[in-house]
Amino acid sequence: MDTMADNSPRDITQLLRLWSAGDASALEGLTPLVYRELHRLAVRYMGRERPGHTLQATGLVNEVYVRLIDWQSVQWQNRSHFFGVSAQVMRRILVDYARSRLYAKRGGNARPVSLDDVPAIADDSLTGLLDVDIALNRLAKLDPRTAQVVELRYFGGLSVEEAAEVLKVSPITVIRSWNFAKVWLLRELYGEQKA
Image (tube, rainbow, N blue to C red; front, top):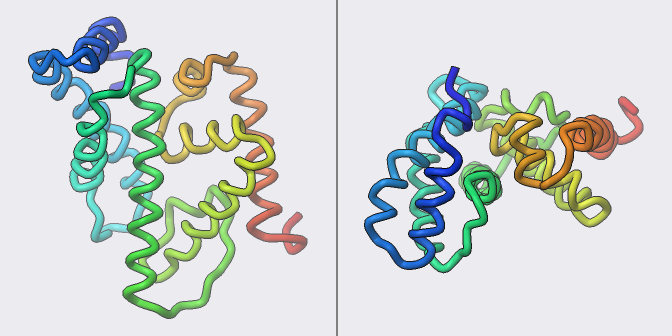
């Protein structure tokens, strides 16, 4: 199974730093490495969506890549930093997509969903993804790191270890934050019904 560890972290980190410093040739070497990883993450996320979803993994990756390519001036710390930022961008794209689809349909009853239900959301219930986004924004005000854990693990598809590397914390801290976030979001999304 492919993981972020398949590409040499040093190679990607070095290419990111060279690219940030203005070396255009570094981008040529970097592109296939990060594109492959971004595609893996998008396939993982989109695999949880219903068949025939109008947003495909390749389209999601292309949109993330197009947005990130303009960020030349960012001083990338390492590949984990890059993929952490990619997770944030992926979340924004997915939420924007849900908003635009919901706006186009302008209807449907919003129903709260748990974080575990979000991957199965169909176009008919895109408000669920928006509800999760709103709840995650509230969580970020209370506990920014816990919200980052959700963003990295859920939207970015990062493992516990990968999220720990991005956040510069221990894996057990990520696990605790992840467990807390699931309970907190369940209460936020369902209120007293399920809590």
